[in-house]
Amino acid sequence: MTVKKVEIKVDINCGKCKNAIMQAVTELEGVNQVALDQEKSLLTVVGTMDPVCVVGQLMKIKQKPVVVSVGPPKPPEPKKETKPEWCMPYHPYYTPCDVVSVNTYESGSGCTIM
Picture 1 (tube, rainbow, N blue to C red):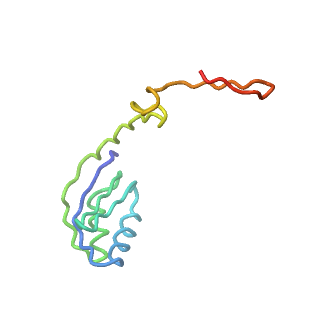
Picture 2 (cartoon, rainbow, N blue to C red):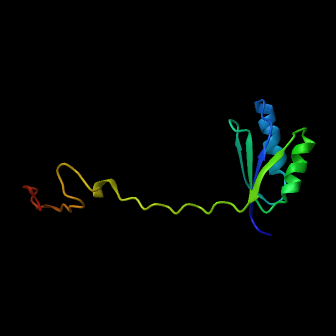
Picture 3 (tube, helix red, strand yellow):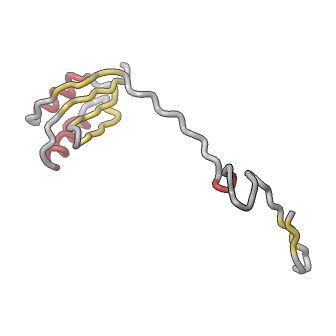
């Protein structure tokens, strides 16, 4: 089965409704990810489950679900490679990626910085 992203408009009036929705949907087989946007009253379910089963589960808990969209999920965004802080493009005292080598003498009389 293919992975689908299902967006459904639901009624979220209180914390109890939110918990009931989350519990009902996560019980379904094939659900990989569930997100609930309370401001938009939008439930997003990702997985191999049947969208009709998701709607059925919501109706069992007295919801009036409205399917907004069914389609493939967005591919994950590629991770951006971050440089260590010491290798940033500009620093007031160093040019980018300067290497500092510190050597100490065995006698402990001092050190040289190159």
